[in-house]
Structure formats: C-alpha cells, structure tokens
Length: 240
Image (tube, rainbow, N blue to C red; front, side, top):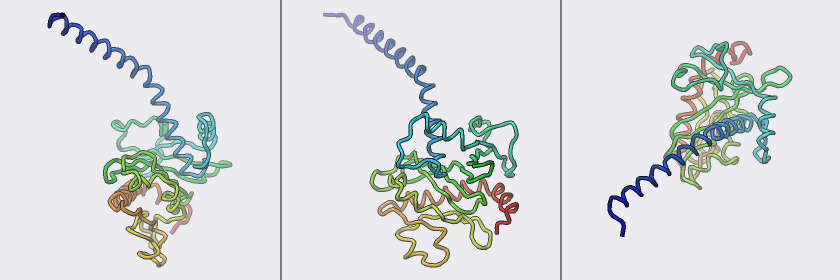
C-alpha cells in the first residue's frame, strides 16, 4: 500500500511528463499546421476564381503550382491604393488592421479576377470564405465558404457547391452604381425577386434562414471595405 505522499508525487510526475510531451508535440507540429492553413487558403482562392475545379482532388504540389503560376497577393490601404513593399501573406491581423489583402488572378499579364477574403457571423459560428470578382469588380466569378461551425444538413450547406454556384454571375452593383452586394433570400429568388433585380439575390437554404442572414450581412460589410478600390477600377474601366 503506497502512502499518500507517494501517490501525489507519482501523479505530479506523470502530469509534468505528459505536459512536456504535449508541448513538444505542439511545437514540432506548428510549422506543419501553418503550412496546412496556407495550403487551404491557396486552395480556396483557386476554387473561388475557377482555376481549380471542386471535382478535382488536387495534390499539395498541384495546388502550390497553380497558385504560384496564377495568383499574386497584394495589399491595399483604406483608400483603395496599393501598398508597396508588402504582400498579402505578410499581413498581421493586429498590426495591419487598417490594411486589406487582395489576390489577383492574372493570365497573360491581364487580370482575370480579383479575389478577396470574406468572413462574419452565421448562426453558430464565424464563417470564412473567398469571393472572386470579374476584372470590372461588378460580377461574382465564384465564392467559397470553407470554414464554419454551422449545423450539418442545414446552415452547413453553405460549403456545398450547389449553394456557392448560385453566386456565379450575380452583380454587386445596381444600375445606379450603388454597391448592393448579393443577398440570400428566404426561399427562392424566382418567387421573391422575379424581376431584373434578381441578379442581386441567391436562393436560400431551407431551415437555415439565420445562417443566410448572416452571410448577407457580412458579405456586404466585407465588400464595402474594398469599395474605394472597386470605385477606382470601375472608373478606369468605365463601369457604371
């Protein structure tokens, strides 16, 4: 029969050893975790711009290659001007809170799409994604919602292609030049907005009204951050 002191020393020793092992494992795995996060970011940027098909099970090497060949990460200030000497992957959320990351998809030296990160509250969680806009910053080329904690089978459907595909071809500006974004309706767009303004709406998810409202809200909020840049591009392109 061991004494209470022995039992205490044994438990303390086991706790310390386990803590050291866990801390060591976390330290060793940290670089791999960061690498995986970067890979996931690149994959979703490629998916949103249509460079990578959601049906393709691309390898790590393929994703990195496609990203390097097609995408450039730049930085904007709050007035929509490019920040020289800084790239999107160098931004620190705390130190660079007033700066915005922007990703350019270029082909033959010409911009095919601008991609920007979007995030905000859904029903149960913060939803993260990327939205790609055409070179005129008016039409949605694609969107991904890749990280969230919404209810599977309900709000969780936002990450499914059937939902994200609804955004393709939608307009974020109205005919008067106002940034109206794209809204998720409760039900079907054909029933709620059968007219010309249907280009600013997408079908909602049955049983996930609050998730849809969250997406509607944070999409407009995030797009408005980039409005000064959009306005510059639209002015140069003659957008209305």
